[in-house]
Image 1: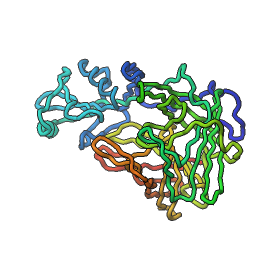
Image 2: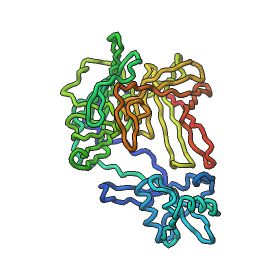
Image 3: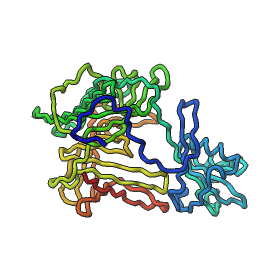
Image 4: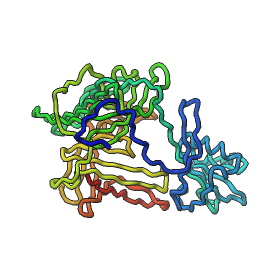
Length: 431
């Protein structure tokens, strides 16, 4: 999209990259007043011929939203405004009923007659009996819910210099100093600088324990794609999505969320533990020069995992819709993961074995951390910080085949309608 050797000049916001191709049929766009946002409801039923209902594979017999019984339309929208929703039609005791499946609602509360009357089950045993008695179950509608992003008229509070490292973390409105992955032979510090004219750079500094440094410098142009502010007092926050078009070729949408109005820190997400970005007066590594990293590293004769890999998941159970994943493994032992073009996490990684079945350990950063990452323990609806935490990496098996052009990763698979697992196959992207 941008020649890697050309410098970035001026305000790039006038030539914002187009939105990626969407899928599904638009049901409508609706303003949700209490959440101060617009939501799009998309009919994605045509992606499927068979899906999973509760635990059984059932056929898809598509009914367009406008063809639903009139009393059900507002009910279905109410569910979909909360979360993506599936609508199933079935026969029960000689009548037609509809069952809405939405992850934010208990399934036993979501059975309706065409009149809009809610079928009440006095006990879970009664509901389980209902599931045994239904016949001719069909999925008639699958709705995906998307927030309509807008940064129109937004102030740009990102302008300035921000730094994150593997030393300073944030939890419970407290800053502590805990080295991330202390067993690795290096730490990573990143500096992100935003100019008001839509240009900036990301500087990555890898510091080894012997003091040696490796620096990478990635210029970019950027655009604000979404801005929201909500809450009051200690719960108030400002939130951005912003799109970076890197000079090395990648285009990534990042999030940035702050509870102090971007005066001191921002996080990628509001999770229990983060290593935030702290605002700086200047870039402490301003003299460091280096190669660009945010592009396609290509093949590496020394390591078959190195490269840019993309894969698509289309689950027919639990979570519906097309998920497009990208993994980038660089030869310097770092990389990043995307969902669509949205940033998921950066990571360092190590490899055990160098054949077609290596064992990878990922050390994620610039993302949120929870109890499984070694920072906190869970109580009854609560989290508490673990004193002297020892964060660990995550190990997964990999499988590389087809001449080094296909990759499978342990834990990345989709469910078929019969709940069998289908591995997600990532294909190498040639430079």
